[in-house]
Image 1 (tube, rainbow, N blue to C red):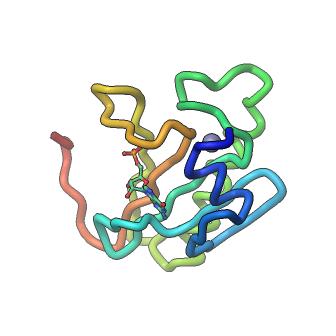
Image 2: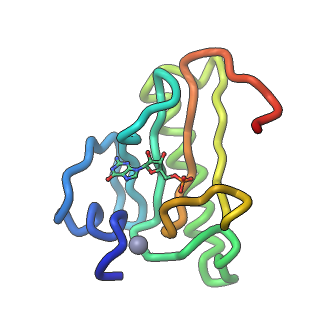
Length: 114
Ligand code: 5GP
Ligand code: ZN
């Protein structure tokens, strides 16, 4: 999508601090980190949210999960654990409408969220 900021990051029109890239998936540091590790994992394909994933995206979602594992290993937080979360819509407080998982860790996290 032309005006989607994550699509613009995928196309290289906006800078990002990349931590992993494959043909289908991109992971980069969140611009406003909420923990020592805060990475966003996105499909390069524009999908508005997890609620918009279709049967044909099933393998792609699997790739996102595998990428999250790799990033957690790469950044040294696999052993201590982390959170993988995706916000959906208004009540989910989704602000960027391109599917993304937040990978958050590097400190003790609290539960439940607000
Ligand atoms: P949401 O609120 O949709 O779940 O998460 C969107 C996330 O994208 C937020 O954590 C926000 O800090 C991050 N973000 C928004 N714009 C940019 C950007 O231009 N670059 C990067 N790296 N992160 C961004
Ligand atoms: Zn997009």
